View 1: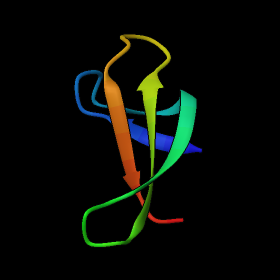
View 2 (view 1 turned 90 degrees about the vertical axis):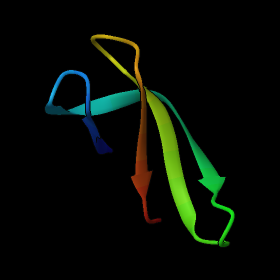
View 3 (view 1 turned 135 degrees about the vertical axis):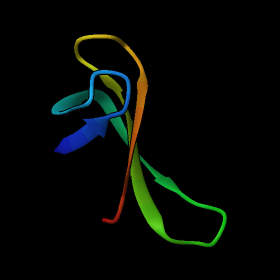
Length: 45
């Protein structure tokens, strides 16, 4: 799943992607950038 890395300023595939639920109950995905290791986040199923 492509996510946007704010540090690299590029769309990349995340590694260790895990589904999470936000405080408002909506689904999201959380992972790490393949290049720099920054946490990336994507809202939606």
